[in-house]
Image (tube, rainbow, N blue to C red; front, side, top):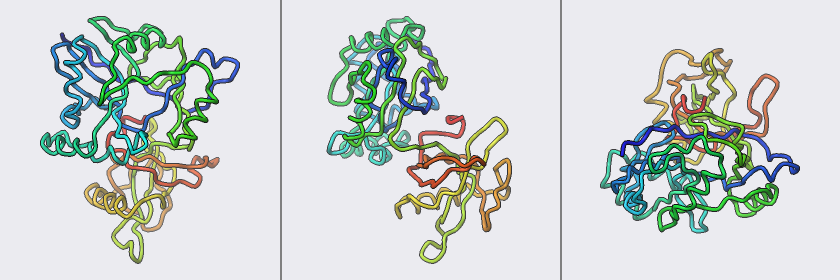
Length: 317
């Protein structure tokens, strides 16, 4: 069966819904992995597509048998994760799996060391019928009725109400946070909706790298700081300089990427007054921790969290 391409619905950063109305919301654990739309045409095959729509199927060979397990045409929404020794999603582990779409043999070898696990949380098309107009509760019921729980995939339960307890549970377990989803909400393909709210224990933001400042001493030739921005309709708006948070390996990786992306002109709407700045094509996306924002729109106390090779600048507008 030919299946429709469906862009994933996106959550909006925010805080827990008020306690007085929390019984109108479901709460799920926020996973730290790679978003994936799962296409199962019912012929035993499966196609995995990233948030940008790229085909990432070959990077995760252990998920190939899911099509044969279900045996029904469906489009499901989920997150691919790599679990640590305590069963928590670990993005750093998953990074060794991402980007292996062009090397099936290497992907198969890496899968033996770092197995992937698919967390399923929504059903948007089933048995030839679109489900996007149905409320969240109905879609979740359809998904759970599929019984998709196995070695490499699962359908974790969602909790209705009890938002504070869910958030505290994830904090105690060392997890990233929770997703609050309004029970009556429809699925909005490609939209960033207030019907889905992501609540993290640490503030983070996706940014685009537009430049860097070389380090000194032992950091000569390596980035001492990254100059980052947020994408707006008018272009790339500078939001600050990030100079902490990297491991030596990450700093070296970033240096290689920055050298390849070098350009002569500043990509920001307004050039920041940073001495010694070098400019790059605004295509690298990273996630930054921060404590707040200044009145001028700059990030307070930003710290590098991770590179996001699964995202392009257009994905975070």
